[in-house]
Length: 423
Image 1 (spheres, helix red, strand yellow):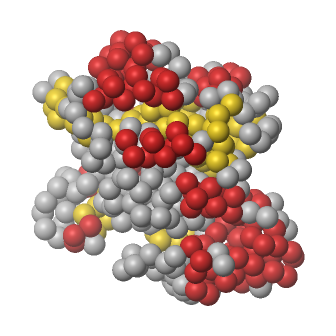
Image 2: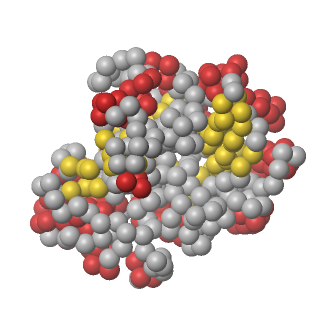
C-alpha cells in the first residue's frame, strides 16, 4: 500500500452493477482514471452486490482496513436508498456506508439480506428507516460509518425539498449521535451549509457520486486528507473528529453547475431563484404545475445565519470546473469530442494529473502545452471567474464565456472506449 501524508479521496462512487452506470466501471477503469485525475484513494462502491463483492475480495490486497489494487488505495463503501414513512410523510433518503473490513461487511450483508435483495442493483432500495439503519449498523460494529448522501438533493437527500427532513436529528432520532458527517452534494458548497448552525457538529465531506466511465466524473468532488498513515482508523478519525483538522480541504463543483441548484421545471425549460419562486407561489408559469424546489431555496429555508459565516475548525474548499469541460469551453466543442481529449492527454502527459493542472501548473507552462485560450480559462477557473448558468430540476448548469458560447453537454448515444480517450 502506498503510504501518503496528503491525499485526495473520493468515497462515493459506483460500479457497473448499479443502474444507469457504464458497463466500463470496473476496477481497471476506476484505477486508471484515479491516477489520471490525481486521486489516491477511492471507495469501492456497491459493496452489497454479490458479484462486485466477490470481485473485490479476489482482487484487493489489504493493510489496516485500506485495500489496494493496481496502485490505488480503496476503502469498502456502498450507497443505499431508503424509502419509508415517518411522521406521516414518505421519506426517500440515500446514505453512504463505509466498512472497516470484509469480516464486518459479511455481517452487514447478512443483515441486509434479511431485509430484501441485494443482487439487482449496486444501490439497492429498502423500506426501513434511517433510525433502524443506524441502530442495526452500530450493533454490528461501531467502526461502520453512515454518511447522508448528497444531502440537499430534492428527491433523495436528507434535507431534500421533496421528501427530506429539517435536521439530522429529525431523520435519525436519538441515533443521530452515530452520525459524524454529511455529504454536501454537487449543488451546494460548505459555505452554503455553514449557514445552518445545526450542521456545525458534522464534518462536511464532498465526493463525486460517479456513475460514469468518463474521467471527469470521478473525483469531480473529493476530500484532501492529511494523515499519519493511510489506514481506515486514521480516515475515520479525520471524518469523526473535526477538531483534528485532518480533513484539510474539499474540492467542490461550483454549486450553480449542479443539477438542482435553482428551482425550476425541466419539461418547460424554466428555472428561477428562490425569490421568484415565492412570487410564483411555487408554480411553473408555463404549465402551472409545482416547481422542483432546488438546493439554494432549501438552504435559505433552513438557514439561521447570514451568508459569509465560517464556523470554527471548518476546512477550506475550492470550487473547480472539470478540466475536460474547460477545454471544451475554450475550443467551443464538447467534453466528448476527440479534439477535447487530444488536448486533455497533452496536459496530463506534461503535468502529471488533472488536479495538478487545475490547481498548480503555471499559466505559461499551460500555454506551452495547450495554447493561450486553454491556459487562460484554466486560470480563470482557478480564480472563480467563469460565469455559470445555474442547473435546475435535473439539468446541469452551463459554464459560459462572456455571456454566450454555452458549453454543450449532450449525452452520447454510445460511450467511447478507454483507448479512444487514453491511447
